[in-house]
Image (cartoon, rainbow, N blue to C red; front, top):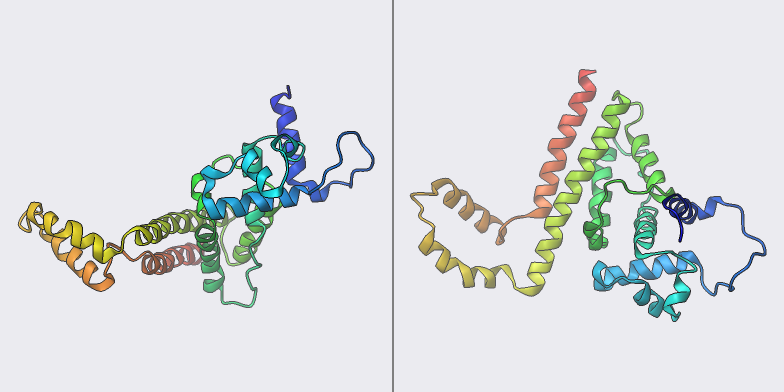
Length: 249
């Protein structure tokens, strides 16, 4: 059985496999597909069926392999998940240097949100203590490059990226929930089902502000909320704060 250190070493070797010299010779069965193909199959499966459907057996079936043979590529689902997250991060396009500073900073949040919307299963993967691979590191390098030279300290640069990322991820979570809810039952039908009963219990006298604002929101968005509009509103306020921090230095 591998020790924790051996497992960590193997995972890092898998993550940074492109940076390692090519293997020559060696023992063991000849691999019929690549690690890249395994990771791509797992990402496609998660995108299509959800993260809970991803398993060594399921990914092997996608590739026409026996489950045990997949362990010659990745040691576990946990390791595969790390590779999947890094592969998705590697898809990020460079942020154009010619954009105005404010737009370049906003693009950090837009890319994070777009990534989650394209791969909702990312919401089920903890970002805490994520093992860093080349995809995530290149993205962080590009994000830092957006903020480099605008007048923020190193710590403020990292904090700005963290705040933009966390806001974009949270908003994407609401947008994903809205899309899933609409697929199951339209907002209009949902309100037809629950609205009349809710008005029986919710007293306008007891909740005057909630009743007034809720009615305005419902009339404006025809839905309980507007994740897209909230994202644009929030990003603008965050940009105001980040640039104010710059101007204060």
